[in-house]
Image (cartoon, rainbow, N blue to C red):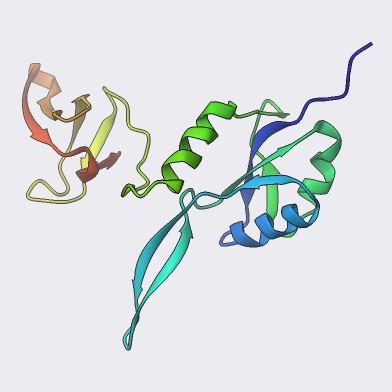
Length: 167
């Protein structure tokens, strides 16, 4: 005989701008929830104000059992539980623990897309803005390779990974 279904962390896909609503509803149901945020300055014509935004827009994290899936999905703002082949995909505890440690620290952090070596990227800032190439090394010295594939030739240039996005 198996014991009770253990709770695991899952990512819940939310309706646009409903992350905080979902977080509040899950807390009211007694479900452990984590919504990492980042504070940004927003500017209007007449003023500037600091606004708290979700670090991962469109997602909220919750720890629950299989029996709690339906109540989770009935919360306002919940669209679905991130799944693979129809099976909710648990998130390793250490991944969320690492993000929790970062957001509780005084360090400056920014969301960034997950870009891997070899991915095609576009430069979005600086003198090479609009240039598309392949990222060949990440870290403190990322390099962007621009190539003419037809002749098998290329040139590489050092770029800041914050200045590129996945193409």
